[in-house]
Figure 1 (cartoon, rainbow, N blue to C red):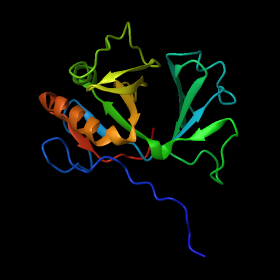
Figure 2 (cartoon, rainbow, N blue to C red):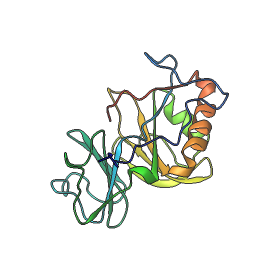
Figure 3 (cartoon, one colour):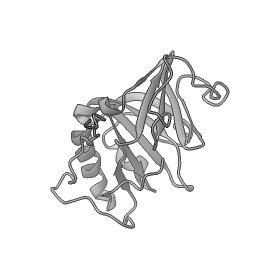
Figure 4 (cartoon, one colour):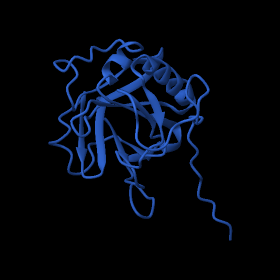
Length: 191
């Protein structure tokens, strides 16, 4: 019998806003834009087990083992993972797998906040958007969620939006990053 498991294809074409292909290997420049849309995304209507004390409420995000959990609305948590939610692909009855419905991008680097400030109304100052902050806002004129979770001491932002806007948003962010010698690179598989 044929395998009927859906194959995930990213909504992001492998080109930046100027038609150049995405790079592989070590990034150069002060901003790196990654398409991490293939990460699993599970929407929960109650806090996932073990996260009640970590994700304190709306507007918070946390890294737990190999997962990221965040909340930007009451009674709603999104769990991100580089792997399936469970080995058999099943999830809790109070959760919905939205992997195929959402695009996910990561913007990292010393000028990541400067890049996002060009296309987003959030104040990215560390006092207002520290690592662990999450918000639903407009990014490049589309509704998106912005999650700051720094990586290796470098500012890093995850941007989650509807799948249909993924390619547009990737292009807008990559274009905004060109001022800072930013580039788009292939995802390394870690969150």
